[in-house]
Image (cartoon, rainbow, N blue to C red; front, side, top):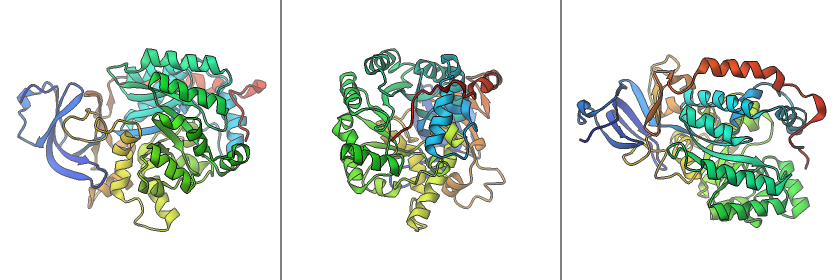
Length: 444
């Protein structure tokens, strides 16, 4: 075989798929440049042809987790707004504290989030926030793959669209192709229909997709029907946002006609169950959406509403909640949960065929996971261990685009101590809610 940049030796390959999870023990994985070039039984690939070897005996190799919806820099508000309903959470806490943010704050917050995500096995994140040049720089340095959307409320429509287009010109395809740009209108309840139509036109002009919050609460749906005669999902179709790739965060309150509309336009959904439990906002009909063919992946949302960026936690909550909601223990079985965290997230981002599988030709975004902890043993069924027992701290090694960004729990791309120091120094100032300033107002 030709020279390999990296060889992972003697791993158990877990390759989730839409119909079944393939598991093969005793495998070697060869990586050249940014891609997987071979997955073969151990011993069939010559170690002498590898520039770097990682011994993986006893570990699971699987695709890196895909976080479909986050507000990364909100780690700076972790634990600052608790036990309050959604309107109060936004108006009295989050949007008041976000008014304190500087671009430098967002840079360090994004780096803190990147460290947490890498340590938990996340290799791709779809992020929606402000000052996205800072976020892009942080993720590029940390080695993550990211789909980034600059949040727009339409308060200054022309300026916001121009800023988003400039961000796309600077960063779309940057960092060895790891950074991609989406447009980020906030939501149909915060943006006017005219602005959403303008965003749709700009997305078509630039050839970009859109990442938006939609149908988060029952109250939002009722208000939209009263104001527009349309559900929030129907609004997105009416204004033209479904003409380009569209990623909807949450979609917790979608009617059957909404599901049919999303399926017809292949709209992706980011399911963030912990946030919706915490804010008492309801649980998305994940099984019904997936049965309709909608790609539904998993997101952490921001750490202000979730407290962690742990996608393993989201995966098990997603499975357990669908069993509970449908009163059916067979709902969302192990294989589907693993696929949602990997390949189905790739589908929702339009990255199928590139991400989410451990097969030759796919990008080398993968993780090695230890399964020797007491909380995992004895190991009767590997898929069950991965969905219901493995912790984020069990992730041993993380590879993105063929580059090792964490090896044996040692970060190789970020100064963790300095990032923590910066976050701690900024925390007290950012938590202030004085002055009555808000970045937006939550009102239906």
